[in-house]
Image (cartoon, rainbow, N blue to C red):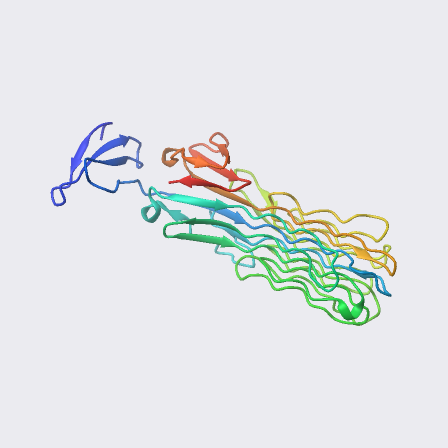
Length: 343
C-alpha cells in the first residue's frame, strides 16, 4: 500500500486508511464511525526482574553473636531469544505478541528493593514485585525474600520466601532454613545447617543457583544470578546476598554474581547493598551481646522491552531509556521506574 490508501470491509461497512507504510508492519486506522484498528503482528521480548530482598541485621542484643541471612534476589522472567528465566526454567517465557495486544497500554511497574531491619524475631524487608500488565497480558516477577534477622538462638528465624528465598539466620546450636524461591523465577535461600555452636548464617538465593548453606567456618554465599543480552551486551543480574559473620570467624558470605551484596563483619566491615536495577539481594550483618548492626538493602528491579524499530509506536510514559542505535532495526526500552508503553 501507499500512505493514505483506503480499504473497505464490504461486510461490516467499516473503512480503514493506511497511516504507516513499512515492510511487514503496516498500520491501518479506522475512519468514520467504526471502531478498532488493524495493527501489524510482532513480538515484544521482555526481561522482568523484581526488587531484591534486603540482608538482615542483628536485632536486640542477646547473649551470643549471631549472623543474619542474606537477601534473596528478585524474581527473574525472561522471554528473549533462547535465554533462561530464573529457578531453572531453561525454556524461558513466551514473548508478548501484538496480535492479542495491538493498540493497548502496557503498565510497567518496577519493584523497589527491600529495606533492612534490626527488629528481633523478624525477617528483613522483602523486595517489591515488578510487572507488565495490560489487556490480555499479566507478567509478574515476585520480590526477593528478606534474610532472617540474626539474634539470640531461641528468637532466630527462617529466611522469607520470594522470587528467590532469603537466607536463614544463625542460631546458636539450632537449625534454620532458607526461604523458598518461586518456580521459574528464582532459587531457595541457604540455611543454618549445622548444630555446632557457631554463628554462621545462610546466603540469599539467586536467579540461577541456591544460596549457600552455612558451615562451622563459613556463612553462606549468595546464589548466582543470570546473564541476558536483551540490551545487546551480556549483563548479569539477580544475584543473592551473602550471610553475615562475627569478627571474621566464621568467614562472611560473598554476594552472588549479578550484583548480590556481600555480608558484613561485626564491628569491622559493613554489609553491602544489592545492585540497583538488577534485583540483587542485599548482604547481611551480625551482632554481639552488646551491639546491633544493620544489614544492607536489596537492589531495585528493572523491566526491559525489545521490539522491531518499524513496530515501535513511540508512545511511552515514565521516562524509560530508549535505545534505537545499539542493535540494528531494534528498539530497546529500559524502565528503571514505573511507566507505560502503548503498542
